[in-house]
Length: 234
Ligand SMILES: Nc1ncnc2c1ncn2[C@@H]1O[C@H](COP(=O)(O)OP(=O)(O)OP(=O)(O)O)[C@@H](O)[C@H]1O
Ligand SMILES: [Mg+2]
Image (cartoon, rainbow, N blue to C red; front, side, top):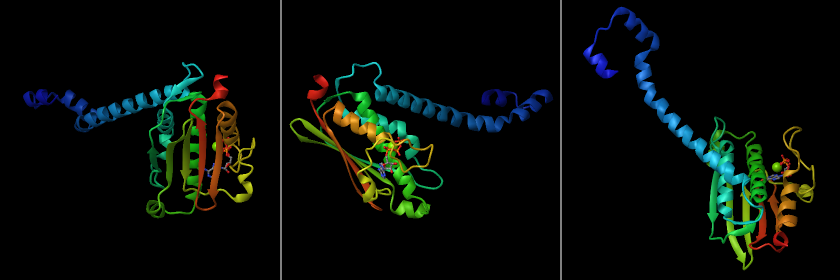
């Protein structure tokens, strides 16, 4: 277009009008930006689709030796839209402390569902704790999720997901894993997330899931899971 305009600086009136209508100047300026955005957008779609495939593990056998960190990372990509900054708050920080883990023999699809439930609950608690706080206030003391993993003995690993959200009142701690227990408004929570997570970790994998929380300070969920599960392979 630029070469053409250089050689024909005075196009006929009809063409001039057409160029005005198209707002060619803006178009030329914006086009590269639009193409850049499209490239970034398609790259993000690729990452999300790959993560969804990885997350669901639909095309795989139920029992398989998998990299737990990959499952957590895919879950974080799927939840990215809830972590990023909005006009009312800065982005939620995710601090990962991954230690070297062996591959874990598990049903990766359902274990990923557990990570999804725990991370979604952490985000809900962080957003609730932001009520009445200004952007600056949250910026100074940011919403944070910590994810730690560690091998704890020859056949056990531990995955810890903590947040500095609302925390949980002591009197309801014993009800958390009950089916249909929720403190969220009608239509928002079904109260099945932790119940299902508990079944998946304990009954399906022979592991353990527990919670430690301080009201007003935050909550920690700990998953302990065997590296080789005698229940699954039985
Ligand atoms: N990280 C957390 N911080 C504070 N409270 C939490 C946290 N995780 C769970 N809870 C409390 O435990 C309750 C039960 O959690 P659960 O995930 O089972 O159900 P839910 O999130 O309410 O609904 P859903 O079925 O959609 O997950 C929540 O309603 C909330 O009160
Ligand atoms: Mg939940």
